[in-house]
Length: 90
Picture (cartoon, rainbow, N blue to C red):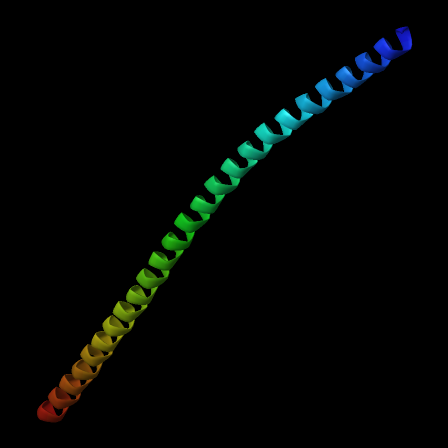
């Protein structure tokens, strides 16, 4: 009789431990899924910011090239004026 009670007590303790760890695992799994979802959303945000920065960089490069062309045009025109003035006064 005592052997049967010890057996049932052993099964009860093992079942309780199993249920405890099973519940803890489910809770931990849910928390990890939430963390992964949060990281996934952060990654999406970073990708959007990266794309916006790439577009801005392209715009900046375009404006820089455009400005450089204007500066070169002004330099050429200045040289033309200098040359014209030197021809007139010589």
